[in-house]
Amino acid sequence: MEKKNLEWGNLGFEYHVTDMRYVSDYKDGKWDEGRLTADATIPMSECAGIMQYCQQVFEGLKAYTTKDGHINTFRPDLNADRIRESAMRIEMPPFPKEQFLAAVDEVVKANYAWIPPYGTGATFYIRPFEYASTNVIGVKPAAGYQFRIFGTPVGPYFKGGAKPITLCVSDFDRAAPNGTGMVKAGLNYAMSLHANVLAHSQGYDENMFLDPATHTYVEETGGANFLFVTKDGEIVTPKSASILPSVTRRSLVYVAEHMLGMKVTQRAIPFSELKDMAECGVCGTAAVICPVGKVVDHGKEICFPSGMEKMGPVIQKLYDTLTGIQMGEIEGPEGWIHRVM
Image 1 (cartoon, one colour):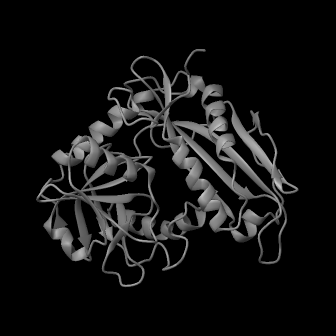
Image 2 (tube, rainbow, N blue to C red):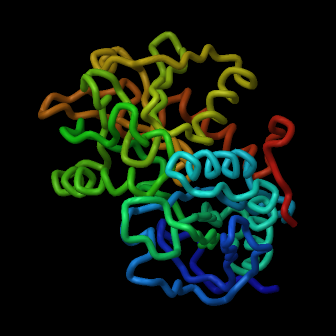
């Protein structure tokens, strides 16, 4: 099958309608076997649960073309686990793990022509999601649900690629204490949109959200986890019950500790410590890890020694190692790479 005639190296992080997607319905207490469809539209009742009470969860993962021409996905089992945990938190039926993994493979194979070639800097982003599809008017879980997966070729999440970005400290809270900040639900991301638009209008790339209880500890951005490097070379990541357990962050932490021999600590990070950090990065499936050059706290600038021109040396090493594993250039831990074709 021939590849689509796209300018792969110039793709943004945008949606393209690809050939096929996967659909499965939950009815009478069970999921059906699922199917592929060419139809990218979703007919829906005006009273569907997703429209009324935002019962929806989603995931994000990627397929990569390796140097030797294979197509791989990266740790899809963790995405399968996380969407199940997210679904249960908002009273949705969890989608079976093995069916999830098989469905991801089906979508990748069916859209081979849309998977960017090796070396273009582009990847195939995969979006599984589940939502309440049947009518509900009282405040309660719906009775029926639909699970879907689509894929789209994408370029870098941030326009500058791996160039350091500038963040501002937000006055808004992304999540509530004892809320749903730790699950990947659309409602959490909706909470960040106003803050993001405001940050962009003021010239910043993203927000830094602090803990919702005291506003003194670093949490995450609207869509990515933080990773810091101390001046002693230690990797430090925030520990909090209201941030999302990022697959990418967990992978970077493992790479740092077990492959690169670095000291890694997960703990609450007071905002006051940022001035003493050597490097900062935001990490997630879309961006992998993007360096942060500066954080602005209501006019007061905190500039990291790594600067605004390029990644710091530690974050660069982490980025190179993880993307090397994903692209099949570096041997990763057993089970991390799933070969689709």
